[in-house]
Every structure is written in structure tokens, then in C-alpha cells.
Image (cartoon, rainbow, N blue to C red; front, side, top):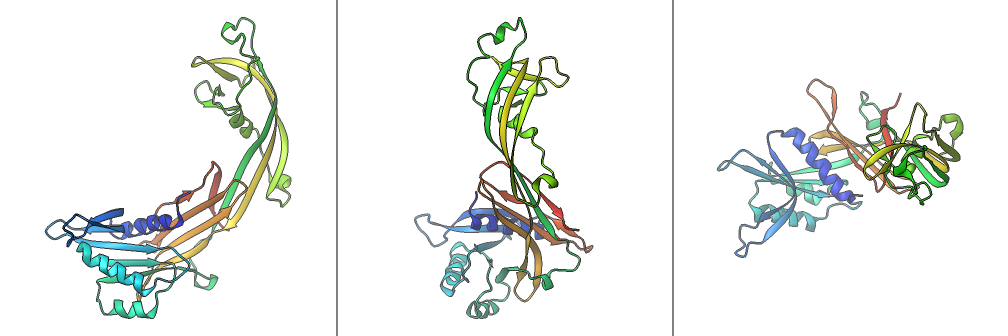
Length: 312
């Protein structure tokens, strides 16, 4: 999973790109320090370039994704970086409000420095026309595969001696369509179907299943031998676990100091049995009053299926 701070930098990049589609916007850039005689550089979270030389305007964006506020020393460091690289503007982004000492300093800089705060919204601050998004998570875990039998037809010389060889259940050596290869685990997952009655209000249920393919079935299964897919039969039993979650996403506004909300961010960080899933959805308001989903950033250390749906 990507680091949380990196995710927020990507979100800021996406939002800022929507404001300036003609600009060149780069993430994690090292700009040369103008006064360095040895070629030293300064790392900038985001760099926005508008226009062309000799009339190019450079804006650097610094993002702090922490629970603590940006302190005055950090802010002074950002101001120093602005001068070091010869940029014209600085945008500071934080999840927390900026101290009055920083706001006072910014008020004396005209439009050179802008402060952006990502503020989590309470129910009474959510725009009335906004829909709520619900995160739905589903994950199937095949816990055990047993009693595997590979069935071959008489005369299948290529299969002789293979049907008794131990199989690795994660190897993608099977196919249901004669083209795409799957593992036994993949095929077992396709056989698991859980409805609300089986869940019974729980977020995790377990069960058992079986695979049974005959060589002459209408829906066949194929086994890969020397890159050739040969029609076979297969029997096996398996145990499965199914995890489900339905969680409302939180909403934060992307607010510029003394200007108000420029964009919004739907977020969720959900802990599952397999790890943590993080989803971020940046949204902006269009000139016609409608809202547009700009992109999505989804991080998880494992495969899963998830849906983001509107709440009724």
C-alpha cells in the first residue's frame, strides 16, 4: 500500500490539474537551487508550470498529511524553498487548519502564497445536493482444497502419467474457455455465491463447496500440457470464507483560506482480515452546477472486489 502522505499528494495533483488543464503538473520533482554552485536540488511535492519560457510561471505545492498542524518553522522552510528554486507561487496543503502566525504571514504576501486545508465535514456542512457514497467490500478466501482428481479420456496420451502428479493449486494451468488460464483456487472462487440470508447480518461466513467437471460436459474444463489446453475432467472439494463490509465514506472539503471549498474528497480506510483497503475519490463542482468525479486512488496489499455506490 502506498504511504498515506503520497496518496494525498496524488489527490492534490489531480485536483489542481482540474483547475489548470493546460498546465504541466509533475509529482515529486527535484528543482535546481539557483544559488548552488555544486548543482544541489530541492525536493518539491508538486510542481505546476504554466506558460512557456521566458514567460513561464512556476508554482510549487507542499503537502503535509499529518494529525498535527503545520508549524511556523516548517512553513519558513517552504518559503525558503520557494526562493531557492525561483518559483513564483507556493501552495501549502494540510489536513489541519493553519496557525494564526502563518495566516498573518500569508496575508502579507498577496497572491504569492495560498493555504489549502482538507477539512473533514460534519453532516450539517455537507452540501445538500451531494449524494453519499457507500463502500461495499467483498472478498473470497479459499482456505483449503482437497480430494483433487484429474480425469482423462481413454487415448489422451499427452495426459498419461500426469493425472497422479501432485498439483499446485495456485498454478494457472486450467481454463474454462480454452483461452484464459486460471488456477484451481480461481475456479473455486467462481463457485462461491453468498446472499444476504447466508450472511445473516454477519461480516464473515464460512462454507464448503465442490467442483465437478466431466470430460463431455457442456461447460468443459481444460488442462495445460506443454502450452496446449486439453479437455479433461476434474473433481475436488474446498473450504471457503467470505468477508463482506458496507461502510459510509467520509467527506472532506478542499478549502482555500478566505475563499471556501474548491473541491471535495470522499475517503475510506477499511481494515479487513487480509489487510487495509484505502480509497480516495476527488470531486469538483462544474460550472453547470453538477459534480464530477475526477479519479480514484485505491490501495490494497491483496486482490479483492469493491464497489462504491450511491446511498439511497
